[in-house]
Image 1 (cartoon, helix red, strand yellow):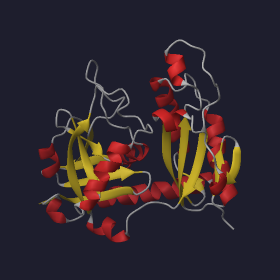
Image 2: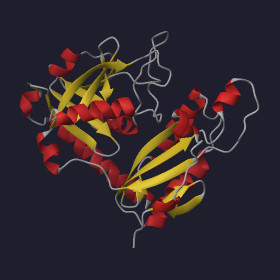
Image 3: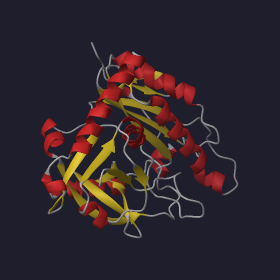
Amino acid sequence: MPTDDVFLNGTMTPATDARVSLADAGLTHAVGLFETLAVRSGVALWLDEHLDRLAGSARELGLAESLDVDPLRDAVRQTVTHNGLADARLRLTVTGGTLSLLDAARGRSPRVQTRPTVAVVPGPLTGYDEKYYEQGITALIHGPAANPFDEDAGHKTLNYWARLRSLRRAAAAGAGEAIWLNVTNHLASGAVSNLMLVKDGAVLTPIARGEEVPEALRAPVLPGVTRGVVLRLAADGLGLEVKRKMLSVEDLLEADEAVLTNSGWGVLPVTKVERREIGGGKVGPVTRSLTDAYAAEVRRQTAADA
């Protein structure tokens, strides 16, 4: 029978017994990173891509110069197997541990030195009712919040409060997601997702971190793993033109179709932005093709990894 045990620092333990030090840097200073993975048919989807992104962020932000992903891969798989998970959501969290960051910053020897805290926590698979995939959702424009001068932007750090607040405001207005803009009022992403538009048969998406042209400002957009899969399917599988570019709110409002991607819900159509319908308020043909292609890719990966 499946259990709800979590992986914490090398040990599977009941969630009710899991303990993290009050001095952990993730709690005291939000120093840490996380990845959210979907488990389908007992397989953690695109696990290597998630771990590569985590290791890259750890290196760029100074959490760890070289993060060994092999133990993290084992921790995820152990959590899936131990709990007998079929379809689920996993959150992998890596914090700075109980190292005193203030002592280190002041040139003093840290009072406590430990390895980073590593936790893998299973939960129910997140997603929307099937009707939202058939009818689409409404999105709310949040405003300029993504800052290219913020070195943490475009990484999945523990500092997620602003995104959750914007998502809560969207929900209070009857919307399913909040669309973030960057400080130049160009489209960035959803609060917890990546954004793609369809215009004249081409798939358009905001430039993400690591995709900038030379000498451009860094992009404050997370390079989503599901985003990457969907863009690859659009280009290689469906033969669609894919453009990564600066996009405006007008581009969104005038798009033929719009979708949001993340690991929990996959490909989610947007048919309304506040009071403005997108694509006549109906899910478009490219969105349906992307949804079908993504579902087929999930089946292929679970069959290959089973």
